[in-house]
Amino acid sequence: MTQTGPLFVSSGDIVADRRYHWALDCAAKGDFSGAADILMQTVALAPAFATAWFALGAIRDRLGDHVGAALAFEHTRQLDPQDYHGARLQLARLGVGETAPAMTRAYVRRLFDQYAARYDTALTEHLAYRGPAALFESAERVMHAARRPFHFDSVLDLGCGTGLAGAAFRPVCGRLTGVDLSAAMGAKAAAKGLYDRLITADLSDFLEQEARGEAGYDLVLAADVFVYVNELLPIFAAVARVAAPDGLFVFTAETHAGAGAKLLPTLRYAHGEAYVHAALTDADLAVAHLAKAAVRSEKGRPVDSLVVVAQKSAGSHAPDGPGA
Image 1 (tube, rainbow, N blue to C red):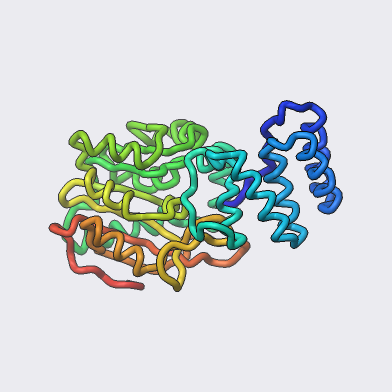
Image 2 (image 1 turned 30 degrees about the vertical axis):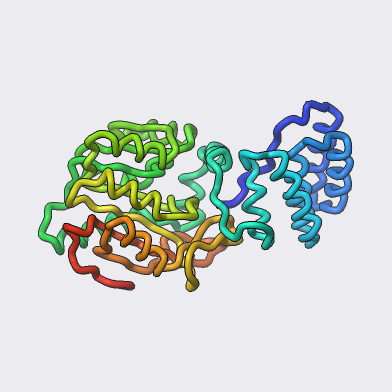
């Protein structure tokens, strides 16, 4: 998922704000050169107007002026330390600074708060999304191979969003807990009546808090979550701490042929298969099943992804292997 729409945070100067809106109108009509000129006037009037600098970067990028775009995004980054706008990601996409910087909480929260109203429709009707179904099928396969009942007393849905994965797994859940950073996404999930417990929180903070108790989740889900996480090991290790001894950890991840984490042009992360294996191993989790699949599309083309089922090493079974 990329930028969902023009951002607006007032500059405090009514004239600059009006020029910003004028620039957006020009861009909407296809006059990107005119929009860039007006945005230059806007930031001259209000040099600390981070939103206008970000829009200028986006317009320059559209015009093919990547150097000018990077300069505008750098201004945004300096004026917006919480990276609400995602300027660090745009700089990385243009080859400036870190190659795969972490997404800030402010950026992710804003992104999904904006997107919540049309999230389900966009994924299921336009992006051919089948992540929850793929996870359900893979988890069922592992449980049947282990001759274990396909039912989980306690389930945690990480980055639960609007509840698409929760809906898929609800029939085989006892108690279902969902956590998401976006309050707007959580509200959509709550309206579906799927969850016994819903929390609005950062995943890392939530897992740290849960680890202090006696969570013991029999199943931890993460559907289309790690495309917004650059470093997987901290989350994997935290999941291992809250999972029951024989619990499953099932997740999807976009992948690429190279090593490590890569920021894609879509501003989502892809993780190399070897990197995923290494992060699981370092977190004392063993792969019980790993398959390459296309769980969504982008511009009509399938996106290379991994569907993974892992469990604590002490109770793991021999992995099916890639593509199984």
